[in-house]
Length: 171
Image 1 (cartoon, rainbow, N blue to C red):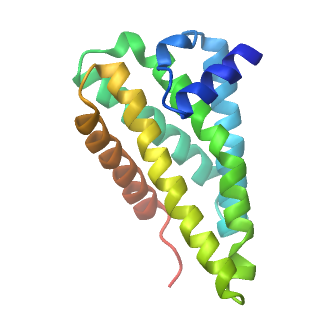
Image 2 (image 1 turned 90 degrees about the vertical axis):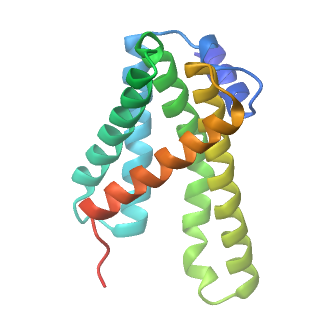
């Protein structure tokens, strides 16, 4: 398990590709559970317990569906497990940073320097996550980095749009 964690860190640092991860169903299940737990915690902190399980299930299902679609269109479904292990695992690695940024929201409402740090940190995490997804896709579907970043941006925007439609925020 330590080797998997080291591999995920190296993928998140854009130094390795998903091929270093095993195409294991057990690992995919473990990564799915960890991702769902992180997603549930984020949803709970942001929205409370309102439709928590539905939000979590939709997030996980949409993540699986989007990457299945991208790999199916490019005829690389044989790389699905490794790609999903990389996507889910690197997302789990970013979860503690996201939790910290979410925790800063309340103090940020009062203190401008905290608001600036929370805002800059959020932008940095979004950009880094998009770079990670682009890096994973570049390796998985064998395309150029610019194209993979464009696909990564599209997947992030599409996922957020669908989740926003499924679970609109109260006005």
